[in-house]
Each structure stands twice: as C-alpha cells, then as structure tokens.
Image (cartoon, rainbow, N blue to C red; front, side, top):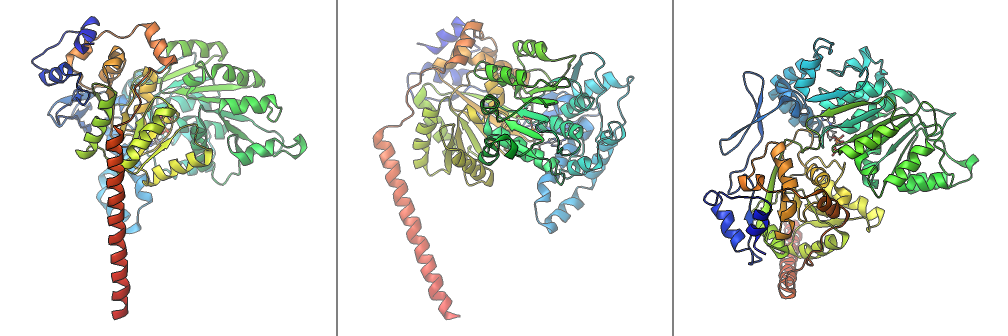
Length: 595
Ligand SMILES: Nc1ncnc2c1ncn2[C@@H]1O[C@H](COP(=O)(O)OP(=O)(O)OP(=O)(O)O)[C@@H](O)[C@H]1O
C-alpha cells in the first residue's frame, strides 16, 4: 500500500516541498533498499545538546544547525543551570578516579572552576516552606500527598536533617557526586521519613540510589535475629544483579547479608532445611523466583518492613501482576513500607498502586512518561524489513556506528537471526536474550562493559534499568511495542547527564504507530517534521494489540549468496591477518638473535 495513503488516512498532510527528499523515497517505497531519514536532524543537521547557561539562568541546548532548543532547568537531572557544569564534573570525576594519577592531577588542575561550582552546589541551603515552590520549579519536581516531607537540597542534609549514619555518607562520597539528582532530592526525604512512595523520573536519573540509601539507613546494621527485613523486586536477573552491585558499594564495610535469589549459591542455601539456612538482611529477586521460593517455604516474608518495586509499572503489568500480587500478600508485617519506582508510570498503574499503598507520597520529576533530554532521537524510514539491514550496513560504512551500541529487536528468534547476519560483517557483535544460560549472559554483559563487544543485539530483556554508562547509540531495529518500551530502550543511552543517540527504524507496517514515538520526541524537545506531528495516533485497541503481540516480520536474512560471499571474504581477511601476524612474530624472533 502507498505509505502516503496510509498516513494521509490518519489525517496527515504534507509540506511536499519541504520534505521532498523524504517524499521521493516514500514514493519509491517498493524498492526495498530505499532508506530515508525522516527525522528532524536529517542530512547531517543533527542536534547537539551542549548545555549553555543564559544570563537569566535558563539552559539552552545549542544545535549544530544553529537552532536553539530551550531546556527547562529541572530536566537537567544532575543540577540546575548553575550546576550543569558541576554535574558533568561529578560524572567525569567518577571516571577520572580510575585513570592514572598523573593524568588525574592534570585534569584536576584544569578543573578548578568546576570544583568551585561543585562546592557552590554542595552548599545549597535547605529548602524551606517559603522557598519550596521555587525549588520544585527549578528541579521540575512535582509532589503530591499529605504532609509530604520537604525535598533536600544537598547531601549534607542526610546528616543534619535525617541523622544518617556517617559510614553511609562516607560510602556515598566515594562516588564523588557533588549534588543529589532531582529524584534523589524529592524521593529520599519521603523514604527517610518512612512513608510509602510512588516515584517517577526519567531513565538514567539516579533512581536506584534514591531507594537504596534510605533502605540501608532504616536497617542500620545487620540483624542476627531477623531474616529478610527488606525486599527489592526487579523484572530481570540482570537488573537484580546491578542493584546488588550498587548496594554492595553503598554498604561497604558493614557486612549486610544480601541475598540475590537469582544467584545459585544464595538460592541453594535457602533450599536447605530451615535450621541450616543462612540469614539475610536484604533480598533482591525477580518476581517468579521469589514467588516459587515463598511457595516452597524457602523464604518467609513476614519480617519485611521495606518493599521496593523497581520498574514498578512492568511489575504491575500482565505477566508479572499475579506474582507481584502474591509477593505483596506475603509481606504481612504491619509496619511494611512500599516504594515504587519507574521512568514510566501509566495512569492505570498509578491507580492500581494506590489500592495497596498507605498514605503515600507521589514524587514525579519532569514530564511523566517522557524521554531523557540528552538523547538525540531519530526516526528512520527503511521501506521494508530488508531495508533495515541496508540501513544498518550503511550506518557502519558511513562511520555512524560508534560503539558501544545496543540494538533492540522484538524476539529471541530475530535476535539470533540478526546475530548470524552481523557476525560475518567483521563487527565485534554479540547477542543477549533469555534463552542464553545465565553464565553466558553474564559473560556477554562483562564483555560489553569492557568494550570487547561493540554491538550488542538484545531483546526487551535489556530495555529496563540496565546502566551501561557509555552507550553511544541505541538502535530500535524493530519498532518498540509500546511507548514505555520506547522510553526505556532509548534510555540505555544518554545516562547520568551524558549525550546519547537513538535511531528507530520503521517500515510501512509500523507507520500506524509512529505517532506514539513522535509524541515522545516532541515532548523531549526534538524537532519532528510537521507531517509526522499531524499523524493520527493509534487507538487504544491497536495499542493494546501491539503491546500483547509483536507484528509478524519477514525473516532477517540477506541472500544466501551474499552471506556466503561475506563469510568467505572474512575468512580470507582473517587468513591474511594471521599470516601477517606470523611473519611479524618470526621477524621479531630473528631480530631478537641480533641483540
Ligand atoms: N547524584 C548523582 N550524580 C551523578 N551521577 C549519579 C548520581 N546518582 C546516580 N548517578 C549515576 O547515574 C546513573 C544512572 O543511575 P540509575 O541506574 O540509578 O538510573 P535510573 O534512574 O534507575 O535509570 P533507569 O530508569 O534506566 O533504571 C548511574 O551510573 C549512577 O551511578
């Protein structure tokens, strides 16, 4: 079907002169090799988001094409205008710590002014009732609930206001973060005051610390008497492991016993008879594992005082809802406090959450269900399924594929297929999905973090929560099945104040759902062609259908002949490289004798 008829059927009209290049390609959509950038920054006019501060304190993202996009202060999650610099320095400082001493010294000297900005930010005065509304506005925080505790402006309030133990502050300071992020400012006081909390803030904005620190504060020290006083539930093993790693760092030196139920060793300790079981202070688990353990009476949740649902909207969705419900029912302690966190909180989820929370506070940062501002988002029309491989290979040959890259597909099958295609392209590519054994999954993640894997093909498994700091680019090879999926997937880049880029491929078949992504792009300040803005969004029914079931797509495969050709070419290339290496090493041996 003609794509323009499809789109026009949705109420779109086009400025054909302005988008003549796109139009040309759309018109020739039958040619499966056709690809067209239908994004705002096409043809090299990509927006860069260098944060500038104007005299009136507003921040601007300067675009390389000259266009200025005003960014509200609060959407810089790592500080307001005056602190933009200091935030960057906090993240940079974390990286610098791992560099050699000499280099560190030189960098430290050159960043005197940054250090001054850090100090200024760290000294921000506590928020009072009189300054509350200005503070909330500046940090783009929205608070709701009865007697919601005032947000905290700086880390020093942890001691002065909440009496947090010095060891916790010492461990926190090891990260070198000069100021709390907006969600940490708003959510931590609520949790430190031991209130139920529903918290929403963009991807990569530091939600994990916002719930971990108050939790450790309340537990104070390991307990010999009670087991499982706190439970953190996450939808994937990988995320559970990541939360565990951060918790370990934050509780360094305190000997808290932390059980990650997805770890075989911890799990087998619980399968023993009750008297021989190890006692744990904190339990981190995926829902299914936890429910099984509760059913088998290996885990007893009657002592739990603090329950955290990370990626709460996912845990309250079909597929996990039943298990989350069982977990809630098993946490029977009268003093149980619940904290729900996510970057996306659809209205239905909030409604459901309110049915089991008590006198909860609601803390939302930025616009609900929106993408992180530092991500340059692009939509790329690829004609048809085959066009995706062409687009990807063009990106590689044009040098636009700067590793590390995460590449999302809609199913395990397609992840495997794409891996088999790309592995012959000479890329350092690997694939991760739930069918791969745990050890392999862990190995792939480590290799990706080390930089040994440049392109990681993944399924929805990696869409939420995973914090790979330096991801340069996210490619949605297959169009995401919901707006939440889109926000979380692209949120793997542009984390902790860094810049990131996300490209979403779409075919004629995806066109009906384009508007959902377009809305997110516009909301986060990306330019979008007018014709896309005028598109009609999918109805509720269509959205539900797509969420429940991924569309049928043509198998990922270039012609057998070309893949054999590439395989042969790669073999030849490897042989030549091997022979060169051998010659060099033989030469070295011979040279060695001359000394
Ligand atoms: N106050 C801070 N200043 C600077 N960096 C921070 C601060 N707090 C956390 N970070 C860093 O920000 C990054 C993102 O944090 P985190 O993984 O908690 O994000 P998140 O909001 O949970 O994201 P997602 O929604 O994707 O799960 C991490 O690398 C973390 O170390």
